[in-house]
Amino acid sequence: MDDARRVDAAFWKNKPLQGRQITSADVLAAYENDKTSLRSGFFLQNLCLQNRLLGNKKVVPEQVIQEFNRAPDRNNKCKLAIARFKAECCLKTLPLRGQQVIPDAVVKDFPDTPEGKLGIARFKEHCCMKGLPLRGQPVTPDAVVRDYQAARAKLELARFKEQCCLRSLPLRGQQVTPDEVVREFPDSPEGKLGIARFKMECCLRGLLLNGYLVSPDAVVRDYQAARAT
Image (tube, rainbow, N blue to C red; front, side, top):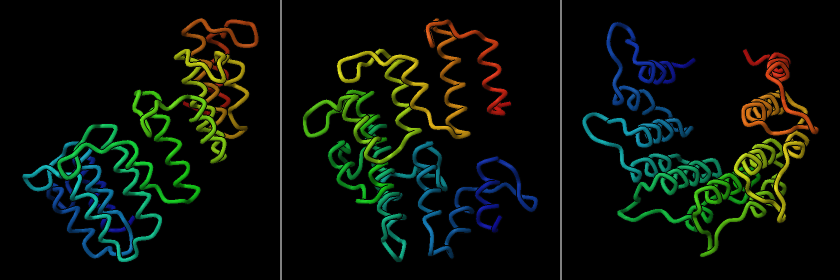
């Protein structure tokens, strides 16, 4: 871990470093010489979203974006970071330049990259769940599914279908069944953990899986298999 990250970690853990308490100003100063990454921008972003002070002042969204734009090469990583932050501002109703950030403006800011397309899909999911319109129309669960499929985001798609199942949101005019959710999870460590968590919800809610109630023992076995201590 480099010195800047060490100072950053000490601040968030509220632990002294070299005998003194670390302030937010100390962290930002530690990142001053780091001109090649966006770490100082992410630090200000965390302060802003968590309502923490820089010195004795609140960090406003404009400061965060300005810090991201200080990167010498405004590449897709910079654009992606700004778009993701604007998405947070939109969802948390944090004003930018005195105005609320609208969903349409967020979508336009994502770069045309695989990461950008996935970012749009995730943001559309939030809009769908919160009832926020895009282009004047509500975002449907079907639209979210199409975007996740286009981004080849299997894990995110499975997690979204899980939410549709648990919230009784229809897809293609039909209710999503627990069996369909389990089939969507990829055969990966994250997918296996996702299945275990979903089975726990089925167990607690009395939802049938493969025609049977999910027993607590079955949930425990799945968590053990996923090594989810």
